[in-house]
Length: 195
Image 1: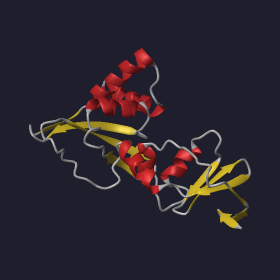
Image 2 (image 1 turned 90 degrees about the vertical axis):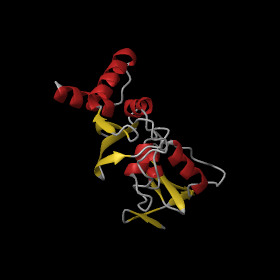
Image 3 (image 1 turned 45 degrees about the vertical axis):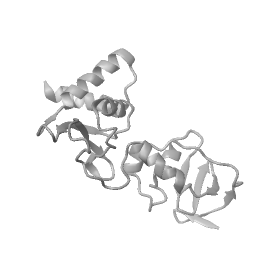
């Protein structure tokens, strides 16, 4: 019998041919901890699904609670998890923030994470541009964006573009009306303090 949070539970073994598909966000990767079964990025993503009440993920198994029943699935496929992290634009290692192509503008976002506090979120070189940062904020991929900075090492400058990004997001809200809650908070915070 398995114990979860100190309580014994009966696990229902799921046939190994049954797979779970889950959308892991960049935010899950940054807030998560692969050594903690409850805070594992895949567990965080699973708990967002309507049919999942709780989840735990280890290197050996994936446990999913639906109602009062716990189901045991095989461990996540490591070969799939790393490409997910890379596709999300999040960095699983710690690369240099200096771009390979020094002639381009690079955007970085100061994000308020519940676990780590305020952190400069790293993006892949291809994702560190204005349009991608706008889309990521708009879609809620940042937990609590605070500031957006752009820099260009070739030209030797940097500037805070939070107000411009907030203005562009406000324009998208007016025309499309589908900003995430974290994007709305960012717009309100920046435009209220900028006036």
